[in-house]
Amino acid sequence: MSTFHDSPTKTNVQSPPPAPAVDHQNPPGTGGGGGVTGILSRWKREDLLRKGSLWLRGIALLLSLIGFIVMATNKHGYGRNFDEYEEYRYVLAIAILSTLYTGGQVLRQARELSTGKRFLQPTTSLFISFFGDQIMAYLLISSASSAVPMTNRIREGADNIFTDSSAAAISSSFLAFFCLALSSLISGYELSTHSYI
Image (cartoon, rainbow, N blue to C red; front, side):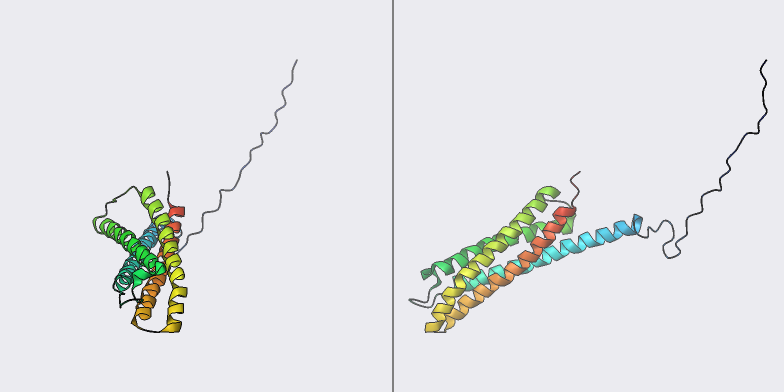
C-alpha cells in the first residue's frame, strides 16, 4: 500500500524587472546615440568628407595647373630655359600628370555630387582615389625635392626671373602635395569605413 504525502508545492514569485530609465534629453524615437540621429550624423560626416575631398582636389588641380604653366613658360634665353635642366623637365612632367589626375577626379566628384549617381562602383572609386592620391602626392614631393638643389645652385650665381619662376613652380608642387596628402587621408578613412557586403 502506498501512501501519498500531501506536500505543499513551492512557487517562486519574482518581482518584475525594473523599468528602463527614461532619458529626457533624448526621448525614444529620436535615437540619442544611434537610430535616426546616428544615421543623420553619419550622413553629414560622409557629405562633409566628400565635399572636403572635392575642395582639396580642386585646390591641388589649381596649384598643379599653375606649376605647369609657370614652368612651361620659364624660357629666358640660353642657360635660362627650363628644358635645359632634367630636374625642371621632371617638375613639368609631374605637374602635367597631377593636372590630368586631379582634373579627372574633380570632374567625377562634381558630377557625382550634382547628379547623385555614381560614375564608378563605390569600391573601385575608393581604391582609385586612395592609391591615386598617394601616388600623385609622392610624385609631386619627389619632383619638387629634386628641383630645389638645382634652383639653389643657380641662385648662387645669379638670382633672376628664371630662378624666381622655377621657385614658384616648385612651391606650387609642394602645396599641391599637401592637398593631395590630406585628400589621401580622407580616401583612406573612407576606404576603411566602407562596407564591403
